[in-house]
Length: 113
Length: 113
Image (cartoon, rainbow over all chains, first blue to last red; front, side, top):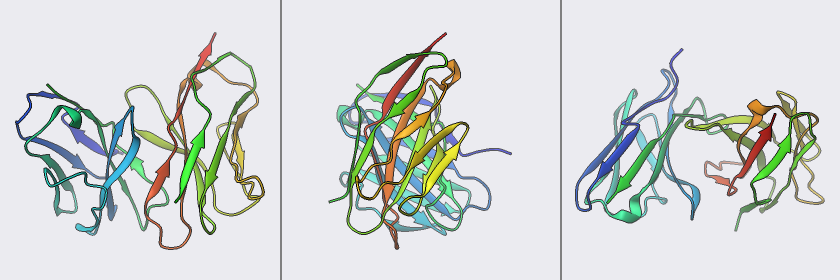
């Protein structure tokens, strides 16, 4: 049974470039979460969706960040333009029926030079 | 506001030693409490949880008891193994309608053979 799938696993880009991170949740799950993990700030919730609809994006750091969920099996997190301070590990997680038991993907390690 | 404080790591133990990782929280109301584990290169996995005072969560030999009087949720294991080497995160979520999980900074555990 496939878990949450994220791509790419690693991304190195230059400041100013657009970055798109992808996530495929576990089939049948109706909640999807995007998190960012840094040494300084730990693990932070950026945004979450319920049935493909964004519910709370208060954790999105600024307008350079955007997230979409066009269907139940795919979500993207886009950063445009990227900055060095965006360097972090970005996790996607999904759950069924609520936030109680979230299944995390392996993460995308982003480095912005 | 809500917050979680964990003991700083890294914690280094020999195999079969007793493990305690301290976690205290600040929250209004009656939050649910969680321990997550992150193995190298992977996403977080839910280890155990407790949803009300005096509940004990347990899994894979790990235990934690929800102590409202001391606002604590310390993680314990009687005999650690090398395979337990990972980062452990304490977390809370507010009881009713709360979807935002607040994570502690994480405690890295090294177990030596």
